Amino acid sequence: MKLKRFEEIIGFSILGFSAIIVILILGTIIVHIIMYGSKVISWEFISDFPKDGMTRGGILPTIIGTIFVTIITTLFSIPIGVSAAIYLSEYAKEGTLTRIIRAAIRNLAGVPSIVYGLFGVAIFVQGLNFGSCVLSSGLTLGLLTLPWIIATSEEALKTVPRSYREGSLALGATKWQSIRSNVLPYALPGILTGSILGLSRSAGETAPILFTGVVFFLPSLPDSVFDQFMALPYHLYILSTQHHAIEQVRPLAYGTALVLIMLVLIMNFTAIFLRFKLRKKFQA
Image (cartoon, rainbow, N blue to C red; front, side):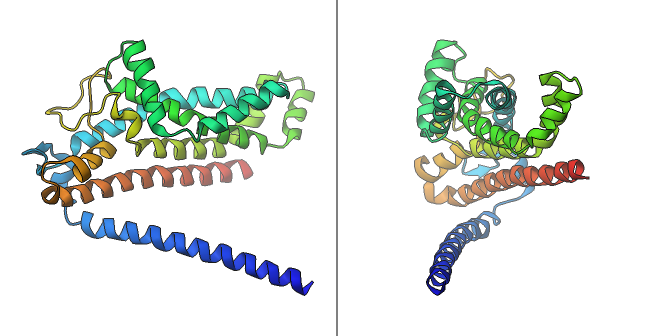
């Protein structure tokens, strides 16, 4: 017993120490970005267009472009992802084919994002002749997000007790009525949380939009989904590595990074808030 207790203490100590290291590293990075990024954050920086080769001005087009492409990603990935999860969890028969599909979905979630970018070029930019535009980038990010949404939604559906389904079916409801009324409402907190976290990850991706529609500078906002656009992650990449005056624009890069982090945090906190409210509603 003493040996097991000692092993338990050692194990928890290693886990706690690892967690502290990760938190310290992450905290150092965030504090560093906040210290330097907050110096350039202003209303002009948020609401103005870039000027003089992005050595002055603001990042409004990058914010709007990121929001546009995230909306398209949401409209494409969530309906398809949740529908696929419902089918796999509620309708598909357990067997070799179903296990292969689930394994493929989880493997796709680990595919490097640049591969999705190249796939987006082949399918949306060239195959469907959408060209380099907001729509191509949004659909490409939708493909990137799909495996995450399917996996998290299926796990959320599995947490709903089987008795909820059986009770509804015993009262004469069809299978879809049972799923819609007795399963989805209770799985909704997990589905929304997983979906928003997946979307927040896609909002910070650079590689998938690199070849499908994003550009460094545009004099105006996109007028339609078939126009090119500016985006925060690609803008940050250019300012940090490719700009002709990197030292001069470094403060702007920190400001852009801070805005991107704030956008992702807003999406994450939205997921936490919705999960809390929905859980409270259905547990009442």
